[in-house]
Length: 395
Image (cartoon, rainbow, N blue to C red; front, top):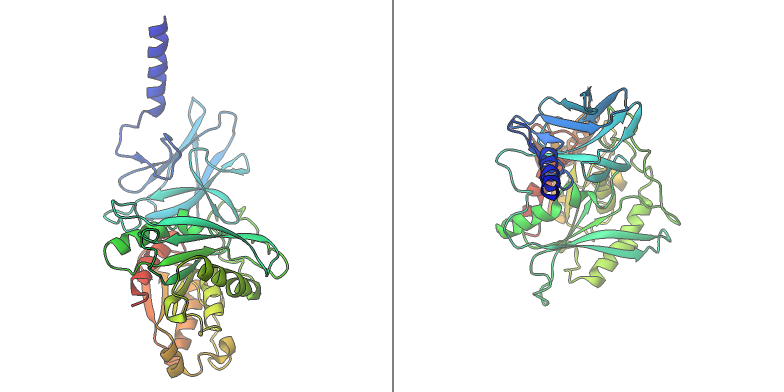
């Protein structure tokens, strides 16, 4: 009887883990042993949810909503059309309630914890973990003089940081987008793995990378944008930019940069300090760095520029205090001004970024422009951005 019980238990466990008779594999973003969602060789994705008492179930991903079918066993499933490679937030709608997938790890985006799926890009591994020396990601808590609140930032230290105590390093401050936080560049963007691989290949200088929370107000913590509840828009909303960036600027200048220079072995001058950000973080980067060129010489704007979401023509004489009015002087100060976006970015990003670049051209300000083919306002765009931007730094 004992042997029979063990055999039956083993058979049941095997059935639970059994894979479908096709070429699909579990997504790498699944929790341990979860077989769904699954990715097919043509990049379709199959989702499954156990909800036997539900009347209607849908999955929302990549700005699409798909009805799921109920099986006799109470399992709901659907296979989507091919998805764009990269990371996508998604959620289930069960009888009108938006819920996370218990089979997926959760990621902070859209001002809430969301399920996420990693869709592999064939032949691309620059953001994958490889057999190379790895840096470390540390969490640094501090009491902000500006907000009066305890805050945290994530700090990447490159391979060899702890074994080479006399070495000092340049610093990249790297910001997330609207509705996300300081965890985004590590868990969704895989910035640490991108840097590990670039440094190991000799393509990028070893550097410290600091990822700070982009929401701050003087005297208190500012609120995030409202969470996306429309399941046709599972990804973070494009709006939600802080109307006033001064709180974040003060946190960076008065709290973060002095703290990092005091706690880590940095090269604490403008020639060895860079800043970049995606979407809202790109806007924050431009607003902060162009007003403080005595502190920053390397600037990157990923799907976001200093004019926010505005597509209106920019007056070079007044924009950000007229800092671009003298293009020659700006070129003498900047080591690098880098701008990137995806070819499938939705409005208003092409127009807003286009207006910013047109202003730069009129002022004669040199810049690098990078285009990510086939991607929209999403993490695969920003991974590619970082992979191109980081090797250009501190040369």
